[in-house]
Image 1 (cartoon, rainbow, N blue to C red):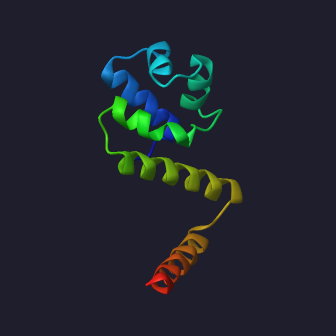
Image 2 (spheres, helix red, strand yellow):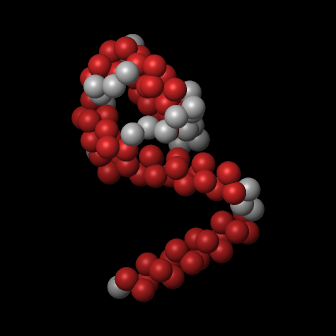
Length: 101
């Protein structure tokens, strides 16, 4: 997925035919905050991921991966990482995985 997590929520919401106000009510949150999340001005509250998964009939693990990848991508962007840095970081992450075994 190329879109941000907020854009993904917006896409899911529209596909399901929900208004911003309706989805906010289902998530028990203010619609203005949800709007900021959809527009990338605020991070989604990860504690609401399971509720969001239930609303859209998604696996919570899949949604959690989308959320984590978006957070990671934002951090990578903020740091200004090059492709080489990302390659080395993935190698280090793989090494850390072997240490846990």
